[in-house]
Amino acid sequence: MRSIGFFRIRLKHANSMGDMMTGRGKTGLKAVLGAFAIAAFAASPAAAATSDWAVSDGGRMRLVALPNQEGGYDAALQIEPASGWKTYWRHPGDAGLPPLIDLTGSDNLALSSTAFPAPEIGRDEGGLFYGYHRPVSIMLRLKSAAPSETAKLKAAAMIGLCKEICLPFQADFELALGPDARPESDEFLTLALGRSALPETPSAKFGVSDSRMSADGKTLQLTLRLPSDQTPEIALAPSPGLAFGPARFIPTGADKGALDLPVTRRPETGPAVVTILIKSGSRTMETTLAAE
Image 1 (cartoon, rainbow, N blue to C red):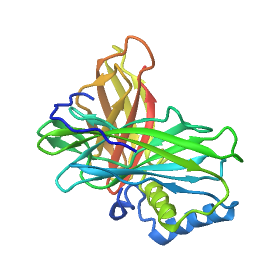
Image 2 (image 1 turned 90 degrees about the vertical axis):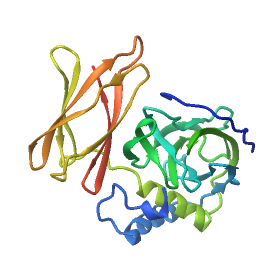
Image 3 (image 1 turned 45 degrees about the horizontal axis):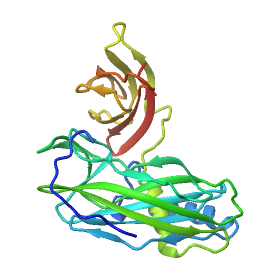
Image 4 (image 1 turned 135 degrees about the horizontal axis):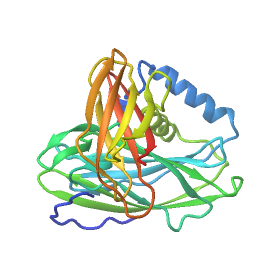
């Protein structure tokens, strides 16, 4: 495992145990861990692996992996910013570097999906900010072409860590994985808490009930179903080439509202999609929509 040196740079446009309840309503810790324990140990024995910590001036990160019941693996990239430092969500906002994870060179593994816990949404010296001042686990779902055989996970991870300056921090991880041994308790707990901190998926009472482009093609218009009458917080992660102006929310009832997203740029090629994260009261939901 290696980490690169640091240099002063301005990066433009580029979970912790205490936060394990984020986006999960009132689900208790015992219920969460109990469900994960049943899922992990009712299946055949599993192997887990944890890398060493890669350390920088702005924080540290490591990789944890565990086989799942679908014949693949769940993994967590654990990031712990140092005191006073911050790192970023899947989209950083106006400035910063989102996490980049490359699995080139892995054997019998391919990335299926990446999931992030809900970020802080606000403004700082760089403008709009989506990210974390706390420890966070980025969750990876990995597919295996031959589940009964061993696998090798090679991951090159780069993240942004910022305080007065921003430091790109890169580390290479390599884990040998297999389906034969049970997980260690700390590895199991890391994966369980990481998954419990993820946003909800859309439901009838919390989600986007309608999505359409305005007649002039300049605004993505959404109808929201919300679990709270508080004004929601919104974070957007558009696909490359797609950009939005400031969101406009209009409440239309105690549990619903209209959200207008002005489209300021469209991709010349490729899909126009946006991942939208909505915080409403104590709950958080995330979904991906076409912006056509």
